Length: 386
Ligand code: NZQ
Ligand code: ZN
Image 1: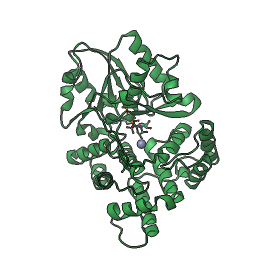
Image 2 (image 1 turned 180 degrees about the vertical axis):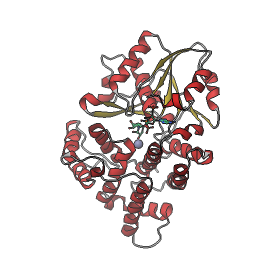
Image 3 (image 1 turned 90 degrees about the vertical axis):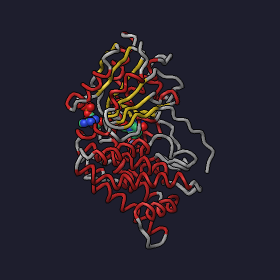
Image 4 (image 1 turned 90 degrees about the horizontal axis):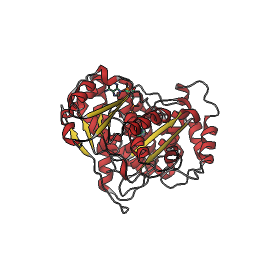
């Protein structure tokens, strides 16, 4: 096991009707910017619950943060923060609203000229403006981690940022929010969280027995929960398991002391930046190709995954590894998620070369757990996913 440091300061309030408790989590004299997305919270009652819980505070609203939070929109929110002298941010939404809020938390206290530098140079944020979240869509784990991803459609870029100052102070996780989520977004949440676990697990053995079993148990629980929550989004027990799996999949715990990959996400972000494909679906497009391309370096963990998560007992290590890859693809298909780029766009030729060039321009020499996947390898992997 590798050395590691672990500190996660986010307070989680999990369960029914926890939104009522927001009042106790925010300083009494705070001036709050209440941030949300395109309006789903106005249709499912979450908006009313949050406004009621904030009745004793000074509150300014900012709505319209789109999926894959857009830099230009966030600059408008930044202006409001400065003009209104906001002191606390409250994100009410899924990963996009929460990530947008993290960007604002960093940008509000940033001393440089343009906050784009935070993303372009991935500047770590040690201290941000304090913020809390009310999660409305389980998927990204953003509610309990310190990372964010922001899109700039003008330049077709989607870049990550983070730092220890960007953990939410608190996050409200009420599984009842799942009741109104459309099937497509539920499937996205299941696929995204599953892939988060894979990215922190599917590397090489390092005798981190507990991390392995944490990861395998999250994947098993997601597989078990998927058909239940897809069949009935108002099944509270399934919604609670779904929500907690998504949070645990990317709150830092399972990545400590083990190698991490994240190549699927690095390539996937480019597919979203180029074509606007949902984040989770970009991952489903690339997973099989990535694992087949890297079969030699990943086969021990792939075989362990096949055995422990999918109960595959027959065959050599390579055969088991390949069976694990097939099971993963079948799992995506079982949630009506297509796994080829050509299922999403007609004009896909040249995508692999474009992405490889982007990585080269950024000076990314090697990605993956060994840091050895070059832009040339990336080109081949993306091409395999056509
Ligand atoms: O905008 P509204 O109207 O609220 O609708 C949203 C949005 O259209 C809707 N929605 C959310 N909660 C709902 C609901 N609809 C009905 N009922 C509810 N309770 O769902 C749509 C998608 O929301 P979004 O926030 O975009 O989805 P998700 O949570 O999947 O977030 C995706 C973003 O997070 C980033 C992705 O790259 C992408 O930009 N990620 C963030 C990570 C992190 N911070 O750690 C890690 C991930 O790997 C990922 O990269
Ligand atoms: Zn993800």
